[in-house]
View (cartoon, rainbow, N blue to C red):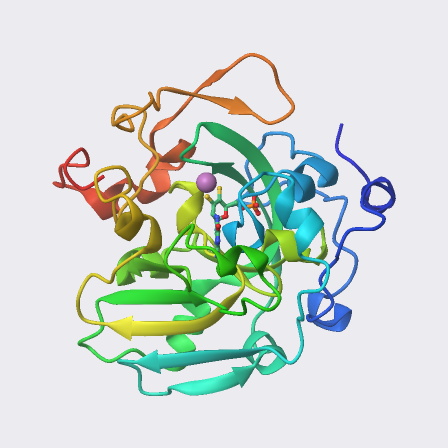
Length: 292
Ligand SMILES: Nc1nc2c(c(=O)[nH]1)N[C@H]1C(S)=C(S)[C@@H](COP(=O)(O)O)O[C@H]1N2
Ligand SMILES: [Mo]
């Protein structure tokens, strides 16, 4: 059953819900959805409770329940997003000005974590391509970089060396421009909860979840493939591309199947997480076992 927003709200009393993105920017109540939109998965979304209590966000701890428990005092405003590097219009944007020119859309996407579990999440966001066009990358720009906020006072996980902080990620420019690539400011029609990466996070549905970096403060444009956090941490296990691929096993486990949160039996993992038709052309001629 698709949860109504009322049921969803009742399920999260006591959890932090994003407030940095004013409701007027999020627009009218968008959930429950009407007819299926072109980019939607037709699978049933996970419950608001599952999506907001089973999280990976190491800045708030390494257990799945830690981000919801430990992110209550995370400050969402003021929030500035710096756009820098090989662009004609570098700038430090207040979050509102960053989001305002873009039309927010609901997008129901599958999310597959490299650990072997998956969910279906109704995001609210806008295509990263719109932002990229707005800031006008120069012809030298070939990759886009992203950085999470560094605030060990508020993010207890950053006081320990679980990963190299701040968390950084990157995409090739054509991946970043793909219409599926989203900057999300909400889910289930409301502002993003802190544990899901408030106030703004990336969503790249055909790649393992760790590419979808949370709580972004910096977006850069560069010429060379940038370093990425999980690749720095374990280069043999996590590559730059990290496309969902049932044929390319993780060195320590198979990637052929996954457990959908809320289900008991495993499902088969699908190439590019089911988005092969839309994104396959981006990797034509590439050996995806080598460029994992
Ligand atoms: N900054 C940051 N972003 C992050 C992570 C993290 O630990 N820190 N975890 C990643 C991983 S491994 C996954 S699976 C997704 C989970 O997103 P969700 O908690 O909203 O489902 O966030 C990704 N983004
Ligand atoms: Mo993940």
